[in-house]
Image 1: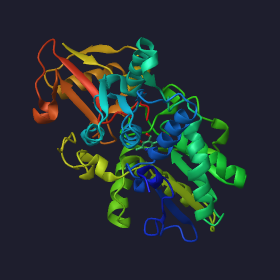
Image 2: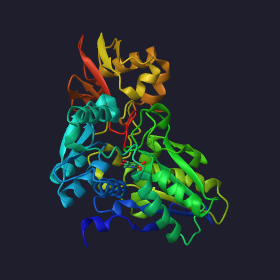
Image 3: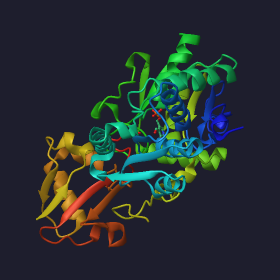
Length: 309
Length: 95
Ligand SMILES: Cc1ncc(COP(=O)(O)O)c(C=O)c1O
């Protein structure tokens, strides 16, 4: 067995305690933190790099370069180390310490870009580097590479279909590149056109749901397919934080903030869904990736400003 | 007068401007004056109770104010106040 063989086939966990208020409705979380580098992005990274190798674009001596806020970078770094490719990642300087360290310990290089520009700055910087030395890099371009949603069509969507015994009725997921949502929703709707696909979105362009993108205010990923979206559920950062804490305390699932956003959305959907509904969402990564974040401590209710450290 | 550097995620509310000037003796006053000048921005910076949202990191120069008195940290004339979401995915963020 190789580390790459451990990608995918993640468990589907029933969130029975949190869904108790909705009798007859099942809420399930796909445990993507169980992937070898710890996030859902292993699936897309593996598919894009293997696709590049197969097409002869990623050859020995080339460096894998892409823009990422962290999880894709960790996945590239893991695969690069296993397969023997150098990896160079363009990331906003405000990416969390846990991510940057893990990437460095896996042997990849980080180029920091302006935190004000978020990942748009990282995206521009990687393209500039490519323009300067086009022959040096393999650029997966996760926002525009069909192999990204392709991985979720072939694996995530199929697994959900099989693990629910073909009974899934709703699928909800937040979107960074939109690869997870697009690929899995496409597969599930192909299996059963009645499956409802619900996109989860931060309520504000200025938000704290790491790894997710406020689509209305940012550059649209080329792989995004809005025709798959039956509905959009908006989640505030505070709701995502609160639900992330509840996942830990009520289910024993120590997951990250976008998982909290996804589960918050799934519970909203559960509140309006008929008995018999089977709602599946994604637990994108582990809470260990956010240990330095302050949100684990519930907000202070006293004082004018919340500057608990 | 302090200078505020505006993240791309908030520029939709500042007519695309990446910088603004705001009056105030403390970080809290400077941000409040900025929010008052661009009213659509307030709900993105403050929660219902009027607290600065917990994921907004504020820097004066290069220093995160959390270690320097929080919103009561003094701001001198001409200093730069930077607002950054606690994470990289914020606003114009990509995964
Ligand atoms: C923590 C986290 N959640 C969700 C996502 C969204 O995944 P996708 O890019 O497939 O839309 C990402 C993507 O980087 C992520 O890092």
